[in-house]
Image 1 (cartoon, one colour):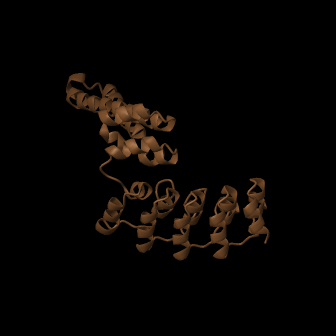
Image 2 (image 1 turned 90 degrees about the horizontal axis):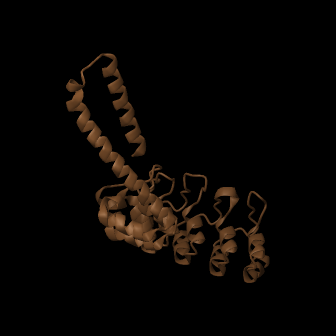
Image 3 (image 1 turned 45 degrees about the vertical axis):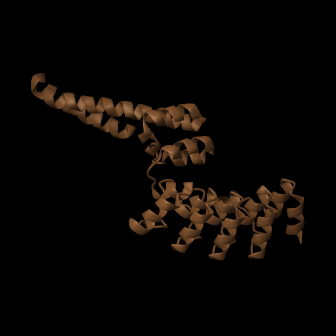
Length: 263
């Protein structure tokens, strides 16, 4: 919104300058100028409130978020300058209490918000009624399936896969994470099972050549390590820095995983 306001202000300034150069009387353009100024002022106030709201979310100021949400409920549907919804922003920042406040005021969700928040009712409506594409990407490059995996929404993952969500579609950003990487990073073994059952590539690489097995070894998830190995994960896969899953397990002192990876 801030960028749009700036453009409108520039157009308005250019208009006034042109009128001044042509010696147009103020009285004649007042009916045009006054409504524009009122609208601009209103938008500026809205933009200021939005920026305060976003900053409060980032800083974890739950009381401020709660008060602003009550005063201006539409703020819960706002987006950052990058186009990321404030709900997803709060979820990315892992501000669970703030997420709950936002959810208590939200009455509509886009496809990505629904996937991340586990709102299957809205997700089904988007896919089946509004015919949205299940394999589309968010403004920051993630798929609905990837978000559902990362935030541990098993039923959402199950439904998305039933609707032909691609389990091997990596994010369109620098992370290059596939849904399997997200599920492992979140330590969601049941979702990992679902993805593998539906054809997820167990040896897919994300940024820096990291595989799901690297991630599982790094976080110390013994059961996921076993599951990945059972499904063909490469023990000796190397990152761009030459590290194997074993190296990650050794660095973090996960001795049971070290033992399995040495077998």
